[in-house]
Length: 417
Ligand SMILES: [Zn+2]
Image (cartoon, rainbow, N blue to C red):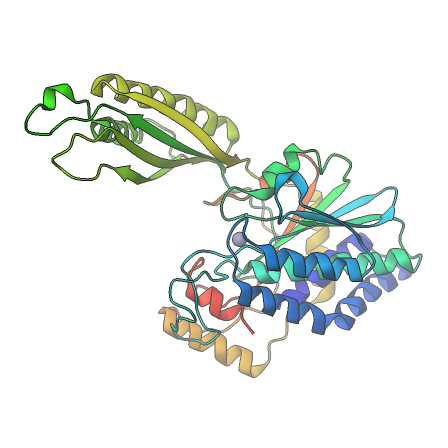
């Protein structure tokens, strides 16, 4: 399934439509390269599915892809942007510089066997609930196909595979962008596993990820509470303030929090409390406004409770800056490749998964979806930060049956060996 993504990204890099006969031959060569490496690409995707390593711990997954790139003749630089599991593999020289992005981190707690019913593989272990095992391997396949075209003298320039860790947590691409790793790139190509196949013009949401900590003064909660100042009081005032904000922020804003620390026992005035909160909007400007307000709410809460507060921004990303010309190029190449043909046993598996997930058992969607106008959807990705540095082309490819829940066991089951 993800081989289509590899073929598509490689074909798009090979030549824009309308294509001359020579261009078509380049596209065909790119597709032939994907076919030739099929066994390697599938076995890498399966191995990374089995490793199921979470953000910044993707040691074996990153090494597998980086070693493969090296064996294919790429120059590999590991440990980029201060992250041991980030790497860049390059081939060729000069312009244009074409970047292909790959991810390989799993999600905690989603361990699942590759069967169409809920069956935990290893209790408490992570699982590939976002299909990043496919994302990494297929994107590298695309980069290898472009490399072979350069090697054969059919294309000139440089192809780079970016091994980008921790998409599900801190967003490794944010730090790679900050370190200027996309500065000389002409175009970035990316794809993402989905339940449909289409050239993507969705921009997603900008995000800020922050932690607010309150430090008070402890005391016996019954004997001398007047000597204490409760950090949990401040935390409650803060979250209350956030919930009051909801009425007055734009409808596009999303705020969600979890309480990380909220005291130990009721008979001690808690001197420490911590809340983790994300705020999103469809544009970075909106997020910045909400962040400024959240800072004031944290200060106000601390003032009311008589405690100290610190607000630490941990991570964040920009919304995707959609490149319409690029989306049209990907759409034309998708149609040139044609719909995905699924084997009867793949459709039977997909239908069983849909039944188990409680959605209509229609099987895999093989048709290529229409090219829609620019869309906004909930959710954030660090691809956004890349798109503000370099034109970024994005496609979604069906790797799981339509309608099954994402970041959940059915996606793990569909992406496994
Ligand atoms: Zn993802």
